[in-house]
Length: 402
Image 1 (tube, helix red, strand yellow):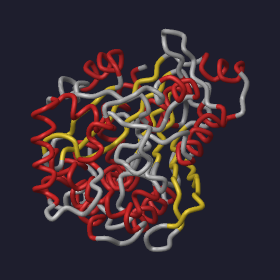
Image 2 (cartoon, helix red, strand yellow):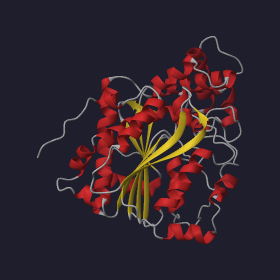
Image 3 (spheres, helix red, strand yellow):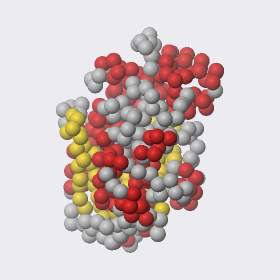
Image 4 (cartoon, rainbow, N blue to C red):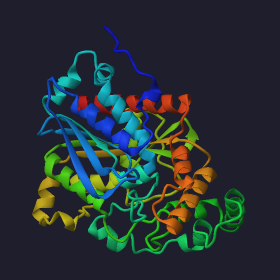
């Protein structure tokens, strides 16, 4: 069987959100004459981008219009990290025949997409952050701490955290004379006093009190997830089995992808599916992740604590009906490591300081942040595109076996 010729990994990486979006839309709209339906949907923002461009989360929907099995693949929840997930999505859409061949030798992927399977690419969950080279959105909200149901806003987001202990370290009152040395000094001081685990959780676990600080989860569900959740609830209710792969970068060893499942049940499923590359232990836990938010749309947990999103303006019966057909919802984060954690944290801290002082400008700290989260060298780009295709191949094979 003829193997499709592959492009160089660097081909799929874009220099800006404007370019990435244009390429994604072009590739998605070029998927014609296939034995299954395809469509493209743009959920536009009222904000504008770094180059004055329109901002939108774009969705490429391949396959069944009434699916029983759905794979969501999302990028850009953390804005500037979106260039990694975007590269995987662009590669897949452009070289779809290569993915199809990797999944099976008998064209069963195309057959399933024409029957009961949907493959849904969600490009740039946080388009403002992706465009302006920020991890947070225009309100300085971390969307991977923001996706809480009404009940969780009352119970989880209102709980006290250890963030106030470390606020002065993460949000300096004045520009340090040396950013790296200032962070190193404070990190040694705080870790020495509180211990590494407490500092890590207190900072990265998320906080809901300081709107100018890092890892701020907001005070209500932001517009980006609202738009996406509404679209997904309107179009993908009724399926029985869901998978979601959410792509990130920054955490972990360089050129290595950490596979982080959401909870023990998800971990067991993905260990069987993907092998011992799966690791749920990252040292802190959050409840407002984007994949968790999507999961709560379609899946009622075993404890019976059904979540609600009041912005959907639906009744209890509507929620129950949407969730009643779901047999399984498994989500996993594919996180590609870049630099040492202290360097990543330092870049986030520095960018956040200058944006708080200067507003949304083309400050060098923003460009530095993009370089931290999306390394422009061949080993990193090869790891992203290779492992990105590997992940899609294995998750689709799993759904085909269901």
